Image (cartoon, rainbow, N blue to C red; front, top):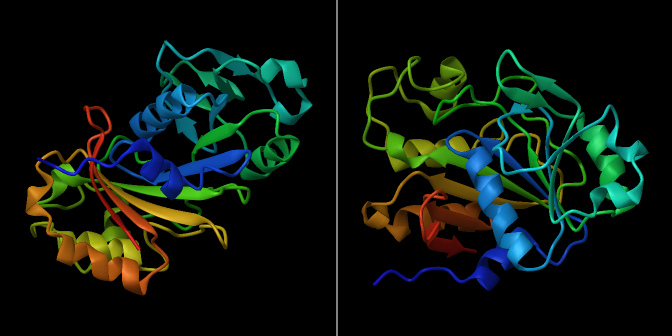
Length: 254
């Protein structure tokens, strides 16, 4: 039987005692699904959750949406719903919403009108892996926790420009050439590199690496991952598939 992490363990990793709790998701391979799973988890714990982005994102129909130019100008009662998506613009041509600048989210967080702000702070154009470009990711300074997502379904697959976003940067950071098979060691190099998965993370922010879309996680040995916790700022590694139950099946912590 797998040792499934308990909710209290996951909340500890998230720094969930902070208020407001601001969690930013970066990377590729399920950021939006991760944020909606977290929203459900936090709502069940009695938190009011606001979902937004510093880029563009899809929003499921079940999420109430409020559009405004600047969320800091809204009165406090506007944020009383258990779950609310707040964005600046609807983009019908692509079926996405546009969010706010990191600075606008910082100002909103300072008001503490909600318990949790979940931020999609990176774009990946639907790819399961990426490396950040020069201007990416766009993380609010108020973030208490940043979760870097990588698509575990790519492990064991041949990778290149056709299935990795920002391929030249990814190849440079990981040392993987086009047509080579992706392994865990390459993802660790992406996570460790100062210009890699945790680029632009605010100082003092808790860092979690999520290997998502990977249910058959017995193939990832713990002794491959624990050295990363000992020699980097990463505080926790989650393995699982956030659209499945249970969402997280293995957890490694410093």
